Image 1 (cartoon, rainbow, N blue to C red):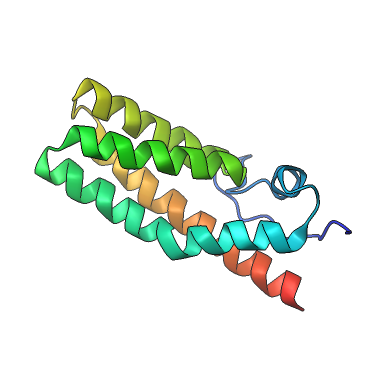
Image 2: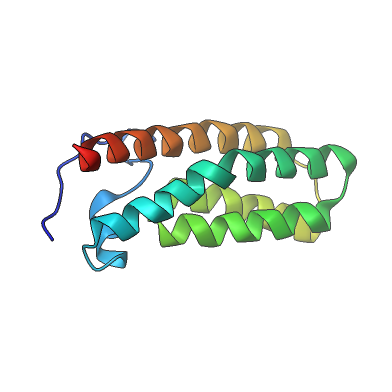
Length: 129
């Protein structure tokens, strides 16, 4: 399978939301498999973010940490390093039961998830053409 060329969806000054090259490497250059992983994020990503917000609002830091842990793993698999880092920070906050800057971290999580979902849309459009 050949590597497809995508326009990066910027995540920060130099980072992209999802590293396409690393994603395809994780999938052994199987574009369909990569697309299926991204489709799973599209189906579950926003709900995971809502769950994290709800658990944080309820003060259930253990449940918040568990959801963040799962999101961290999913982000790692799809090469979404900024999302993985944010999920890891939320997981650690949940484990230590500290609210600290949790509000700003969760805000960053919501923004980063949107960037990842934007990437998924671009990937799907370019690979289905």
